[in-house]
Every structure is written in structure tokens, then in C-alpha cells.
Image (cartoon, rainbow, N blue to C red; front, side, top):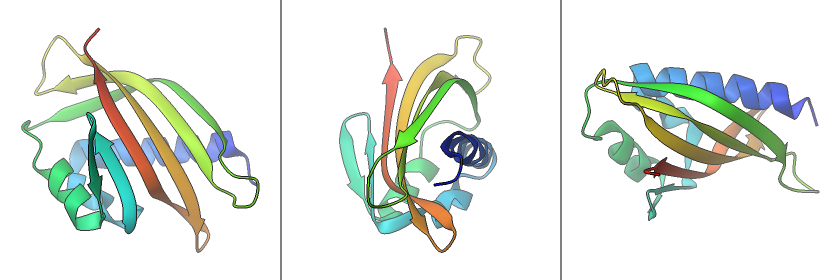
Length: 124
């Protein structure tokens, strides 16, 4: 497997940059078998996931990654887990929200897609 930390960093940079500027542009990262669990609610399939993330109730968002950890998630497939924590600035608020997100990435045609995605705001 290639350097998983480099893959995780490249993926994370692309994902959050795209999420922050053009959420619909994330469509190629999901498949009909993909699942997003958003704040405890499971959502499956590309169209349902895109509907969720494109209709979130804020006009602008900026992700600020604090930690990024990656590890292999299978002994037989070059998949990986990516765990992120950070701050979420919504609509220019001066009080960012803490968030955590875990991606399970699967290889496909020389790239990766999101098999599982778990997002949680930390209200601590």
C-alpha cells in the first residue's frame, strides 16, 4: 500500500476544500453502496448522501482540521480508515463548532471512494 498518511492528507484536503466551496462536487467520492451516518442518522447511496450535504442549513462553511490519523482497514484490500477532528466555522460565526469525522476509503481504478463516512458535531 502506498503511504497511507499521504493518501489521507490528499483526500482530506480535497474533501474539505470541495465541501466548503461546492458540496455537489463531492458526488464522485460516493457510490450507491456508500453510507453516511450524520449525527446518528444513517443515509445510504450517492443521491441520498448528496441530498443531505447539499441541503444543510448554512450558506457558508469552513473546515479547520486539527488532527488527522490514518491506518489500514483490511488485510486483503488496500482500504484505509481516516479519522479527523477539527473546527467547523458556519456562516462566519466567531464560535466554531468542534467536529469529528471518520472515513473508510476503498480503492477503485487507481483512486479511492468513500465506503463509510461518520460525521459528528461535538457539543462538549
